[in-house]
Length: 258
Image 1 (tube, rainbow, N blue to C red):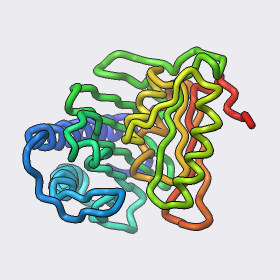
Image 2: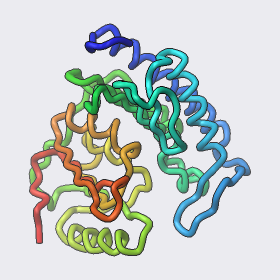
Image 3: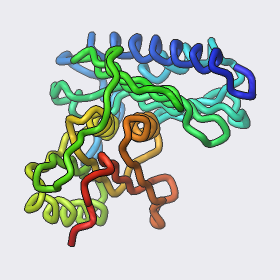
Image 4: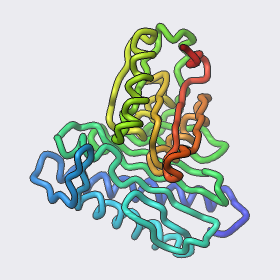
């Protein structure tokens, strides 16, 4: 792909990303419910060898098609890190769900050009649901266009609150959950930031809030939400430059409650 950005080059990137996401999804789905090799078992997280295998598969597909690009993923970096083009990859978003045989996880792939997200793909291999969008285009779910929900009252809304791992951030999230659980119709803790954003984008959820996530968790979902008519806000965390606080919603509900 060359700069400046052209519709044909972006379409080629989209096709490549979709194929990579589906191939990784086939790999992950084939291992669902089977004994897994654990690379690292942490107090509140799990790292699987399958995470690395999935990212390696995606990396190979992307760099074969675009050898001058960079890869920035949960399982490491690859390619030319000085490139204006950067793929942002979460090879399994919702690893803990996957490990416990909870069928709610996904692959997330986004493409940035000079810091601007221009492509987003999220694939849920268990439900065979594929969300995709190019910057300036119409977001689709399995080929069907969608918009955010049209609900305007928080009392009618379903809000997903992400629960992060560190004690301080978990305390903040608990306070947010307590605030919204009494005002929204329902609150949910789903376990996959990327799917939360995909669900906000297509109207299944009305809002998603999390105090500490990584770029690879939300890059594709941000573009989906914004393209579907919603709003996405993020703030860098002062205590960890690699993490951001995020809230995404349909743009109609007032989330500013005390």
